[in-house]
Image (cartoon, rainbow, N blue to C red):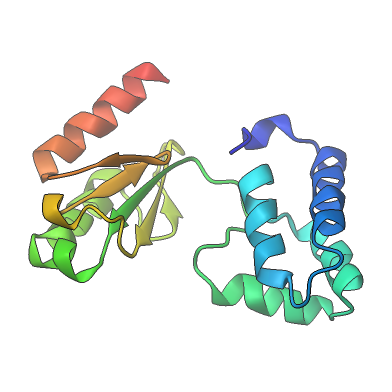
Length: 162
């Protein structure tokens, strides 16, 4: 993912236009377009929604409805993303308690950003680390057999590095 702060609105729009061009000949490409935009820009800026809608012959409300329906999509820049697995294996091994600890430790709810702006907390459903549950991803790097203590150490280490 590109560092969000490095993209101006014009650069974000240019990126979106490139994504739209890539998907121009595909049927029903809204979801792949939104995924590509978020991957490239870090979120889906409100000012590009009209461009996406026009390119797909959809209303802005339809595009906004899809963005707001799926929790994966962000309309604001995120901080460092921590995704805690909530699939069955991780739940059986304590991911809900880990999630509660993470929310308290970071001082934010799911889909929220920590008070210091350093981390965004999100759920994810199955990281494929079922044998090493509970698991989480931090900036697309998996971490298995996570405990509240290991979580605190990981967050502290990440804060020191940045």
